[in-house]
Structures are given as C-alpha cells and as structure tokens.
Image (cartoon, rainbow, N blue to C red; front, top):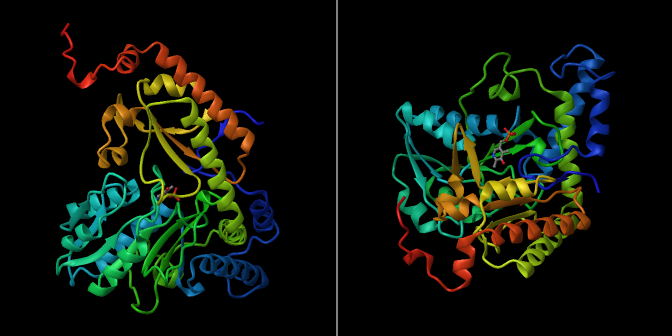
Length: 404
Ligand SMILES: *Cc1c(COP(=O)(O)O)cnc(C)c1O
C-alpha cells in the first residue's frame, strides 16, 4: 500500500497512465497548432483535437460541434453564466441557482449581481436535494437561466436533473449544469436530461489539469453565448485562444475510458464505499451521514463523527488524504457552506469527513482507512467529557454551563 492513502478524488484525480500515453506525442513530435491550415503539423493537431471532441461528445450524448474547449470547469461555468447573462440581457436579468453550488458558480453569480442581475439562491432540503416546487415558484418572466449542479462535490448528492431540465424547457428558460463530479461516474445524457449547457473538467476524471469543456446545445434551442475571451475566433467564436492539444487529447481519452469502464467501475466504487460505511458504523456510534444516501455518487461518502474535535480528528489520520467540513478561511475555521445549507449544525459540520474514492483505490486501502478512523475516533472520545455525559443519558442541550 502506498502512503499516504489518497481518498480525495473529488478534489482531483491522478492521471490515468493510459491518458498520459495518449498525450505524450502531442508534447513532442506532433506539436502543431490546430489552427494552422497550411501544413501537416496543423492538420495532425486538428485531427487529434477533433478525435478528442468526439470522445467527449459521445460520453454525454452530444455532437462534436456542441463542444467548446476551455481551461477547466471554472472557465466553463463563467462562460456559460456570463455568456447567457450578456447574450440574453434583453430577455431578462434573473438567474436561479442553488446555495450549495461550487464557488465557480456562486462567485460568478455574485459578480453578475453587481452588474444588475437578480440571482435566486435556492435552499435545499435536509437530504441535499432540490425541491422542484420551490424551483417552479422562483421562476419569473425575467428568468433567463437555471444553473443547478448535477452532483455535489462535497456530499455527492445527485439532483433531479432531468426534471429540472423539463421545467426549464417548458418555460423557455435555458438550463446549465455543472456536471464535473457526475460526468464519467454516472450516465449523463444532454438530450434525455434536457440540458442546454454543461460544464466538465479533465482532472476530475483521471485526465489532465487545466483543460475542460462546455457543451453548448445547437438545436432545440440553439444556445448563443457572448464570448468572454476574444481574439482569433476559435471554438465558433465562443472561446478564442490556441487550443491545448495535449490536454484535449488527454481529456478525450479520459472520456473514452470512463465510457467503456463506467458500468464496472461504478459498481466497484459503490461496493468499496459501502464497505467503508459498514466498517465505520459497526464500530462507531454517533456517526451521521450528510446528504441522501439514495441519490448519491457511487464514490462519495460524507460522514460526521459527533463528540470529537475536527482538527484533532484530521491530525490523527494524517496518513489519509481526505477533506473535512471545515474550510480554513484566513484565521478562522468556517464550517462548510454546503453542510450549513442542509441545516447541519456547526459542531457536526466541523467533524465531517468527505471520502472521495477513485479508480486507483483498493479494498485494502478501505480497510486501512476504516481502521485508522475507528481507532482515532475512539481515542478522542475517551478524552471527551461530552461523549461520556451523552452516554450516561444526560441531555446536553439542557445542561446549563457555568460561565468562567
Ligand atoms: C473541481 C470542480 C470545479 C472546478 O473545476 P476546475 O476544472 O478545477 O476549474 C467546478 N465544479 C465542481 C463541482 C468541481 O468539483
């Protein structure tokens, strides 16, 4: 077993060696500019780009012409939201999104708010799912875009995307989804799911960092975007800039592998994830699953361990790479805004751990991580007077603490 154990595959994934192999020639002998029309170097590069485009389109049920290459999902999200807001400004200025979106969505929306857009940030239910009635109620005659992520990067909860897309379609509103965590992990189909714009990223699916794509629907409706990067008119004028040929080849290969291996891989992920959950719950009481278990990515588990201190917990498992529900912003420890939006209290949010399993994890690693957590949580609880009191049946919410 390689140490430390990597269980943080929602943050990034290692490059699949098969992806690296596909990319290598485009760093060396086949270095052409895909926009060079006059010689073989350019033609080769263009051919490689078009192959990658097709591999990406195939994975999400799109056509090649609907794929716009970007530097990653942050840029895809910016292009989708700002591009629609500018292009459709005459139609309206209202956008609906959710409070648990990735910062690349929330910060883009905040930026647009300063420019006069109205944004509705929908709150979610306690299980992390969006209530479709609340969505319908938020729509006005000025709504031009709904943007809801396919699956959440912290709690792995999968939204009712098809139904959201249907509502948007019926109202003539464009529908964008940040599908970074879903693409390549679960079946995603832009036609069946009624999606008009979709963001994806290479480095979350065992591809390279710094490359991503935006799917832009071409018919029913034909979506238009105001470009955010000008110069040269690449990518149908929507995103200028010399294409990252090795990155695109890698992203394409990553998509092709994901498509081929998804049925087997998702079963393996779910089995390992469930094993981790069973092992932890068998030995530890007072644990809580954050978000719906039923509507969840196969590779995600997000669990809180009551009566331990978050920082001590993380320090105790320093040979395991995971994320916690606390984000160090400057000097203070802020609980995750995603967990907060679900109504989870600060105490439980601070002791939450996000386990993100990936293609290269093994059952042996699952057993190691479970064992590590069990021993650390037990040790910390032995030192916790609160845990002891709770076990003695004292209702901690009714205790009056003496002030010092
Ligand atoms: C990682 C991530 C992003 C950002 O993608 P980059 O390619 O790193 O810019 C956006 N949304 C979600 C849900 C993510 O997990």
